[in-house]
Amino acid sequence: MEFFLQSPAWADVQRALGRTVHEESGPGWRFLAVEEKNPAGKVLYAPYGPVAESVEAFDAALAALRGIARRTGAVFVRLEPVSAGFGAEAAPALLRARGMQPAPANQQPELSWIVDLDGDFKDVLAGMKPTNRNLYRNIHKKGVTFRSSQDPAEISVLLDFLHMTAARNGFKPQSDDYLGTVARSLLPAGAGTLFIAELEGTPIAAAFAYDSADTRTYAHAALDDTHRKLSAGIPLLVTLMADAKERGLKHVDLWGVAPEDEPDHKWAGFTAFKKSFGGREVAYPGTWDLPVNKLRYGAYQLARKIRNKLR
Image (cartoon, rainbow, N blue to C red):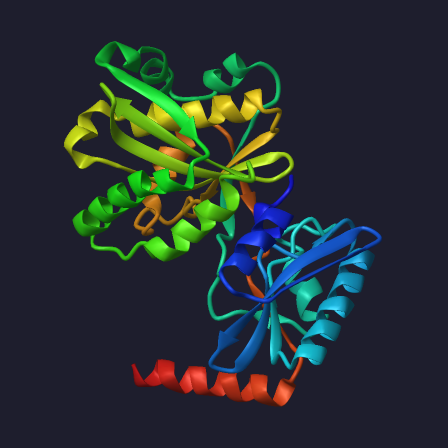
């Protein structure tokens, strides 16, 4: 499975946002790492990276990351290793043995929900809850239609719905400037698609998906609460999956889900929604720090612990 946050298209997004990006590869490994600011100083961050085919390849990627960090003056490397020949359970011991320690918090989800698109799309539909299948097949009878767009200007449709959702649920969405930049970078390049549900020609829901070589990532979605009873978000997501299948993609990543044993988790509602489309859970090792300037990293950790005690 190709991780979008390690793709050339995501590197283009980061550069459009004014960030410095480092891309390197070698036998069995590759990574995209972004320079970021942190209370410790400069940090090199590899989201869902490095990607490596074996432990040996992972070690080579680590050496390259450490070299870039030293050249650029980064205090530490923050990484989220995947596909490195070891699973999430074996990862902690392997990573600690290489001088890494868990980051204060995961930056990307540690658990994700993947829908595989193998076989005929009717097989994908068969894995969903009957309600989802029925809505997808019959919602047109209520005057709802779906379309896709590669026009960056239409990101305003999604932004309007995100503002409504934020006001209703009391959360802070990503900024309009950020999502506008992402749209302008990805949509014309065909690396992203905006899906819009309309009721008699008026938008009522929207979703923004990012595409890597074989995986579509369900990145952002929101709807007009006025038409919530139509449940247009469900057939909109199925439409997004059907389109991915038509384009030859192999997986749809529905992104983060809550652990099964945490019913009160803040993502519990989203998790139930995502799991209703069938699929499987994938666990990643989480976010880890590789100190490069150990003195400054130690001071950063100490300051963070003191702040937490004073709260």
